[in-house]
Length: 212
Ligand SMILES: C[S@@+](CC[C@H](N)C(=O)[O-])C[C@H]1O[C@@H](n2cnc3c(N)ncnc32)[C@H](O)[C@@H]1O
Image 1: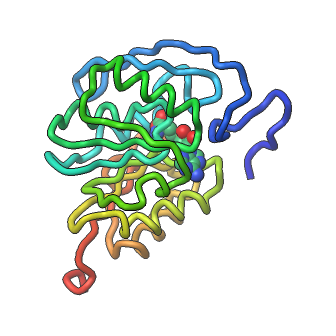
Image 2 (image 1 turned 120 degrees about the vertical axis):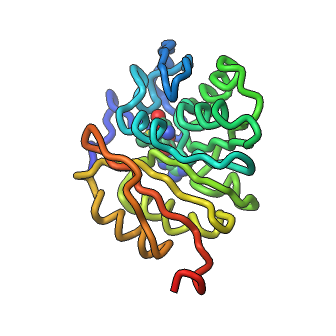
């Protein structure tokens, strides 16, 4: 599925985008605060905060302490807002795209965030030894539903007890199927928010024995 890459077209999830990095600065008011983001060609949603991203940011439920992962962080909007709202939490943002990583580093500084860091790599590889209290994602659906399913299926092994996975998906692009994938992985799922054709799914990691 998805368009075939051609000379003029490149997916936003390319590891090393070849398209010339034309940068722009966008401003956004999220969760009652102002943020600035440097964006560029070759990354997801460079002109404005994506509507799905916005829905996730406005509805995400965050722990007061511990570790948060923003997997597939793009230029860092989700993780940076989370870090800004919860200064006692440490946020780790990961992406496969080196330009996204470069932009996120710049955006952490631009928004004077002290409790976040960025790591480049495939899915959970850069954080394989860590256990998170919350995992947030606007996943790379264009890379294929199998990648999104992998994020969900492998999430529990990177999560502490009572941690949550919160993911925004287009209701019509695998929304129902992903609800099942969440249920298979966690035994529970709820729709945290809906809007603009998107939904935010949330599952909580419980002790399997308890949830039976
Ligand atoms: C839909 S975009 C969301 C970006 C950002 N979270 C936002 O909401 O603006 C998905 C991101 O996942 C990244 N990605 C794609 N495949 C990946 C993989 N295998 N491992 C890590 N990140 C990946 C892409 O580079 C892209 O930045």
